[in-house]
Amino acid sequence: MMSKMWTLKVVGLGAVAVSLSVELLVRLFSHLRAKRTINKVLFFPSEVACVEHLFSTLSTHSCLCPLPHGVETSFSRLLHHLLSASSSLNLCVFSFSEMNLSRALLLLHSRGITIRVLTDKDYSDINGSQIGALRKAGICVRCDRTSVHMHHKFAVVDERLLITGSLNWTQTAVQRNKENILITEEPDLVQPFVKEFQRLWLNNDPAQKQKQ
Amino acid sequence: MMSKMWTLKVVGLGAVAVSLSVELLVRLFSHLRAKRTINKVLFFPSEVACVEHLFSTLSTHSCLCPLPHGVETSFSRLLHHLLSASSSLNLCVFSFSEMNLSRALLLLHSRGITIRVLTDKDYSDINGSQIGALRKAGICVRCDRTSVHMHHKFAVVDERLLITGSLNWTQTAVQRNKENILITEEPDLVQPFVKEFQRLWLNNDPAQKQKQ
Image (cartoon, chains in turn green, orange):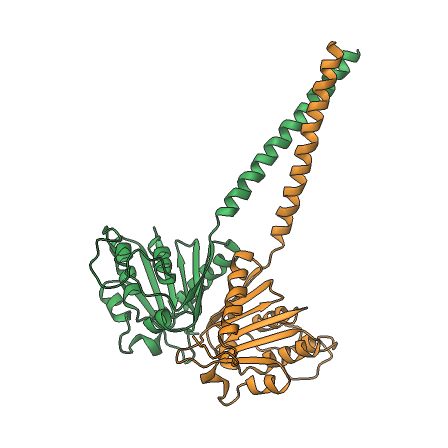
């Protein structure tokens, strides 16, 4: 009788230990997954360095341009995250004149990534604007034509990664100003931007009469 | 002999169960704590509504101004988070002319909160700038006097909560433009801004000859 009680207790405790271990492994796994969530901040002005290796199969040291090579900068990190897009890139930016950012969009477009660009009318036609070049390449662009500023500066990569901050997509912003960019996969931060992009995109559909 | 073996096994399994339970509780606790981390996005333009109840002990409905009452807006949420400061507020903002944001800083200052404001020289003297009023009240203000733009628009509350985005602290930005603000307690995002503020603050110390 005593032996049966012991067996029961052992089996009971064993069951508790196994269930706790499974629970623990599940939590550990989700904890490790959470650890991998990207949460980064980049500050500008960025050092100026060669970024050719991000656009081609060239190794960092085989480019012959006079800029420093093999240097990771805020700007090269920004380009790296943009070029990580595998399905879509939604961009909402007040002013866009930086050549390498334009090149990144053209490269993604050539890879078949769906790109949508929403920009402000006041800055789409200025000298050096890249908006015309994007349109010519067949990238879908819409302009906010309301009397207020579409002052956002954010991009959403694959509806998963948010890139946002104070930085307009201009050379002055990248190389001279004090600016910040925040890169995050935190769903509570990314999803509102995914929805806001969709709302603004529909509101600026030139086929729609009703404007904001 | 057999009974001793059983006792050993029971004690061993018991120990495993207890240690796993403790581990589990610790992880559960940290999981619940992580869940409480603030991660919010506010979009602008904000609805215009009365914010008097945030500045006084007035209830939402006892104010007699003609604005809508009892409405939570992007702007009231922004004010609420700023006014939650209990020890410090570090602000780095390109342009600052919005009256209620200025009022919030003056209220925090009167409560003994340590406030430091870093702004851009080009916008500190323009019509409607609140920088002079903050200085007169005794709030510590520094101006970036370099030839480039100090284009940040971020605030760090109690070195714990980051408020950042595209929004300058102007009425046009709040009430008219399309803008965003991100509010987060995520340490990987907050801490770089804490450090960058400190760096910029020291770099713009008027007592220092060496400027960026």
